[in-house]
Amino acid sequence: MRALVVGAGGMLGQDVMRLLGDDAVGLTRSELDITDARAVRDAVAEARPGVVLNCAAYTNVDGAESEPEEALRVNGEAAGIVAAAAPAVLYVSSDYVFDGTKTEPYVESDPVNPESSYGRSKLAGERATAGANPRHFIVRSSWLFGAGGKNFVDTMLRIGRERDEARVVADQVGCPTYTGHLARALIEIAAGEDYGIHHAAAAGQCSWFELASAAFERAGVDCRLEPITTEEYPVPAKRPAYSVLGTERAPLLPPWQEGLDAYLAEREVHA
Ligand SMILES: NC(=O)c1ccc[n+]([C@@H]2O[C@H](COP(=O)([O-])OP(=O)(O)OC[C@H]3O[C@@H](n4cnc5c(N)ncnc54)[C@H](OP(=O)(O)O)[C@@H]3O)[C@@H](O)[C@H]2O)c1
Image (tube, rainbow, N blue to C red; front, side):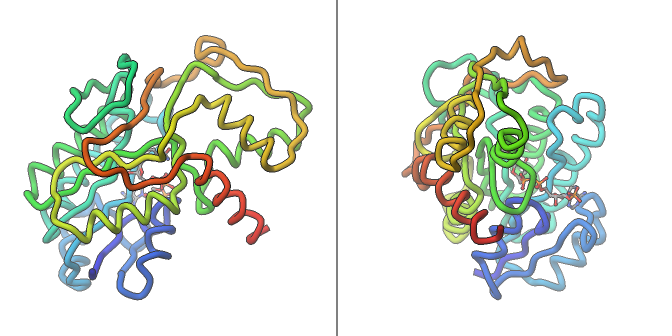
């Protein structure tokens, strides 16, 4: 599969590039700004890919509340630019397109209802991608962590080493997904012809508190964790209370605990 990866310098983009190897062309933001339609068309013409994997995004969930136009420009409009220029396209989307009021896993056919500016921009990107190219894969994932970027597990491990105790939200539940595992699933999806929406997140579910506890236990971090509610940790963007992703297709990812183990092992190697 000859692929072009845009947003190749991001946390997920780096893992996708590593797994694709020499078969792929990867362009970071400084090499290709996806809001520049002419530059996107030129890059596709030069790379001549069979598929474009769009890993570029405005990912500051709280920042998007005060910069909704910028989030929409990158996650929404530019997604349409990439899709229109590509022979086939994979757009990475988010569990935040759901409002979190369900009590069992969200599947591909469930109605969307984003409650944050970031979630609305990702939904706009899904629609722009689908509208611009019938050969599209829209892959929703969630709670990503990986070696190539800042993420919740990394932040908690740093805090845990600096402090004796920390408070972590325990009433938001999701699927923490290792980017190494997601990248493998994206490549599998992009190599096929099963167009449409796919949910690809780690199997199982947990809260942020449970994720931090598991990370501390595995990494041998001695820091007392206190579970708190979303109300006790106010942030600009509203997050879904429950955004577990299930799938109507064959599940592709292992349990989140395996992802956590793989991530911690990868950090050890690079330490
Ligand atoms: N992180 C999560 O928990 C999570 C959960 C669900 C879905 N997702 C989705 O997964 C995908 C990958 O996310 P990630 O965690 O890998 O995020 P990331 O590390 O922030 O990577 C996004 C990349 O896109 C680049 N970018 C931003 N604007 C661009 C533009 N105009 N043109 C080209 N590149 C641009 C960023 O460059 P700069 O860093 O220089 O801005 C960054 O390298 C995104 O679609 C995201 O919405 C993420």
